[in-house]
Length: 330
Ligand code: FAQ
Image (cartoon, rainbow, N blue to C red; front, side, top):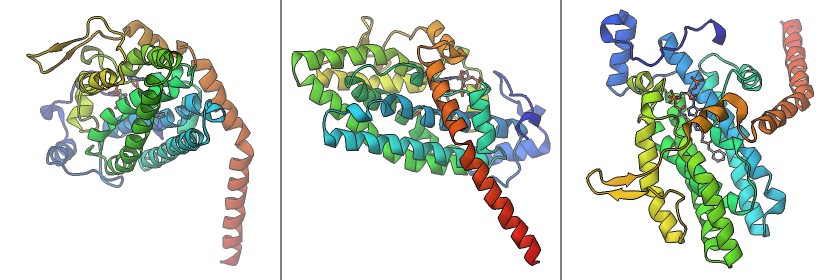
């Protein structure tokens, strides 16, 4: 079904005069702030954009378990282990709510997984960076979940009902994740010289990849204009990146850590920080599959998919048997 949908709308926005009467009525509903539900009529491009974004988001939650899951056995205390375990389980739950939201649009979770594994669907660039030390668990919670919340709080008001509702619960849990990451950073920043150095090193490595999470700069964003017209996205990539920097820099100062950007300065006129852009060549390399951990992440997901084949086959056989029994009883 997914393959039969129309091509993406590209960089521009569909103009009102180009819309069919159905499309115009649909846009009026969006403009009036109404929620669109799965059984409502919707343009094929709206459906396709949502499947792409929600599917990519779901994959990110699932792949995003890997860098932190890697540290569960090595957490420094039982309390830290229990917290990290709960966080990683939450991410699995987020993936499931999001796959369910995408399934209401007519694509199956299996199709989405196959598209992830064969490279037709993406997941967030951030999860292609390694987590080398315990301080990285702090940086991931503080910066990566912090960036995720910045992006996801506005998505609670997105036009597609199942996506907006999934976001409400996800955002509540992400807030706890961000706080636990900041707490790890605070403990390390107030610890020994070696612990402070680890915290600084984690910030140095995760700062720019976190800025990349918001997507390319607005001039290079392909989907933003149409996605915002459809209220699938509520803000541009650069708007959210700016908000994230403005929120995070004072937190780094509170921790006594230095943001790895010599050009960082407060701009009174705009009421926000001026900051250095990430290396966009690196970003495009990472999302093309050439980041430091892309091969490992996809290998882990492929192994999980292959190892789970017997469960899927068993469930299908059970469902088939049940249907056969029901047919025989009729
Ligand atoms: N990574 O035209 P735009 C989490 C692609 S939160 C990879 O600007 P769009 C929580 C984009 O797909 C992380 N690819 O695209 C957690 C497009 O390529 P395509 C997930 C990226 O969609 C924390 C092309 O570049 N959050 O996981 C990225 O309008 C800790 C052009 O870009 C979401 O997905 C990127 N960073 O804006 C879990 C939030 N950025 O598809 C575990 C929902 C761009 O045409 C541990 N998503 N691309 O081949 C969104 O808000 C949007 O999709 C953006 C991108 C903002 C990510």
